[in-house]
Image 1 (cartoon, rainbow, N blue to C red):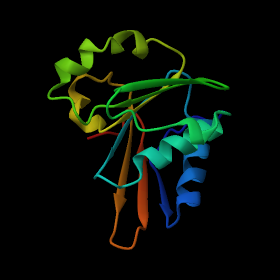
Image 2: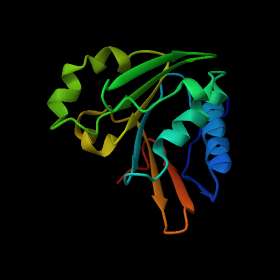
Image 3: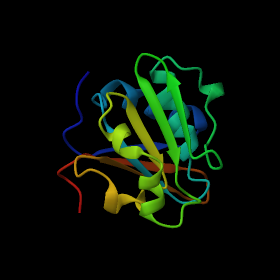
Length: 149
């Protein structure tokens, strides 16, 4: 595993390319990484998570956005915790889920709509920002800890 010490940027135009970026992230994020996944509705956050799952040996077809359940865990080469905080009203609700234990685990924690709870995320979390244009082209940027504004 090669940790990602600096910003990485990918450009994708298909779902398959976005899945491939997710697989690459799975191979390079360190154990215990917490990732704030940020982007507009329909930007491809869940597709990227399916790619991460695939990179961890988890069937990507079993991964669904936990918008209503809030948190799903999957077991593969490493544990994957997939959270979706879209429906939460404030960061206190996020903490009420018991995420402090999650922050201490060796698994990967991917938090869709992480910008809503950034104030309570550990300072060593990663950010992945996805921007999409009218043509479904995506710009995916990984910002590692220590490089965030």
